[in-house]
Amino acid sequence: MENQYEIVMGLETHVRIKSETKMFCACRNAVELADEPNLHTCPYCMAFPGALPVLNERVIDLAVRAGQAMRCTVNETSIFDRKSYFYPDNPSGFQITQLYHPIVQHGIVRALVGDEVKSFKIERMHIEADAGKLIHSGNKTLCDYNRAGSPLMEIVTEPDFRSKEDVIGYLEELQKLMRWCGASDADMEKGQLRCDVNISIRKPGETILNNRVELKNINSFSAIGRAIDNEYKRQIKIVETGGKVPQETRGWDDEKGMSSSQRSKEDAMDYRYFPEPDLPPLVISKEFIEARAIGDLPIDRRLKYVNEYKLQADDARILSASRELSDFYEELVKLTNDAKKSCSYITTILFTLFDAHGETISFAGLKFGVEELARVITLVNKDEISSTNAKIVVEELFLNGGKTDAIVDTKKLRQVSDTGALKVIAEKVLADNPNQVAEYKSGKENLFGFFVGQCMKASAGQGNPKMFTEILKGIL
Ligand code: ZN
Ligand code: MN
Image (cartoon, rainbow, N blue to C red; front, side, top):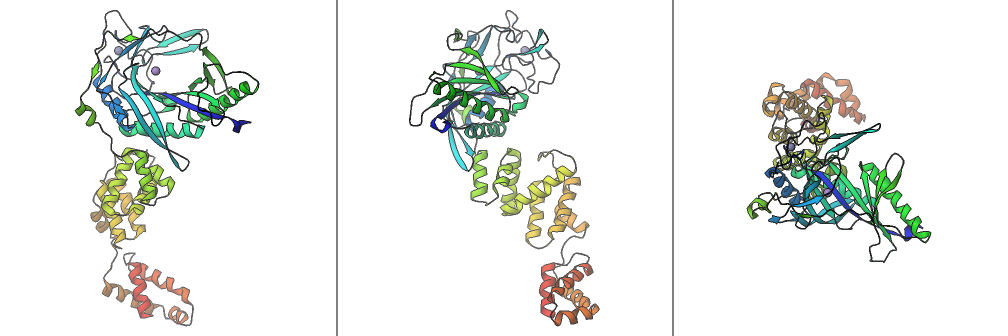
């Protein structure tokens, strides 16, 4: 039954912009929502009569960066509109938003869905002010206006999604893009990224869009899949029993595993949109837009790591997830010309150190520069230090900083590659172990490792094992 219907989805996502202050006033934009209620309020965001909005330039800065990351057109002129509605979380009785002339439109977000790179079209992205938060306890409702007037981006896609995997793939990539360009941490659990899904079904081959249901209140990545599955089945059931899916807004209840109707098409609100009289059109220059261009995106880097650098898919995903980490890795590869070792020195050695010392992974706070780690890899590749000793050097850099070469010398970790000196050691080892030499010569070839081990011991670990091997082979 289910494979007889195609699911068609479009997304509307609200992302909180990570500016220091709110959109139109100097109150702190508390993106973490951990402060006591109504701490970050002023006459403007409490809508006292006569208080006027002053647009925060940083909001525009970050919104333009986000637009660039979504490969959108950023409009030099956009217009704020007033959307009127009454609700207790909104003291002014209207929201300042952008309806007809958004700041950003027509873009593409590419995302990996399984192994496939898919493109999802962005119809528009506008900026608007958030409402406050209502806290229902018992038969009382409390109002917290800390969030009132905080800046949001509303990102609207085309109906390009055909599976829950598409939706989750897109949202994960969108989250990365927002972090990559610095516009938002886009943490869904903290309410910094909120997603509504528009869902309709149709028979395969049909090109019409049937009545859609807007699903709201989806609060986590794991809830998205459940909400979509449930709505898909619900609509099929309606159609199969001869009905027609009514166009409506439904709220998802993840605990109950079901949705319930919030609003039908008939009682759609009239928002009485009109141009916001307290704000002039927003005009930004070409230079302002171009200065915020974003080069490589996380997906570009991820694909490069797999296709050109031949890294494992998982390593490529990890190394491209944050800009800080990815930039560090790129710099390391540039200095060492060794993509695989650069990867393993970060994902195994460094990550293990962060973990062992109970630190969160952060490259900004490292006690050493990327060139010191590059030097370690270069010394290993030149056989000047062993990979075992390299770990000791990296740990010292991690804990106390310093210079790689100085650490190698102080700790006497440099391998001796002087043939003459090594030969003297090898000859002494063989002379001291005549029985083993005799056994080796009579065919017990696995004793060779014993001789190399003895040579390493005799050189206090500083002899080059590859050279010992050559020398021993020569003598024996
Ligand atoms: Zn305020
Ligand atoms: Mn909105």
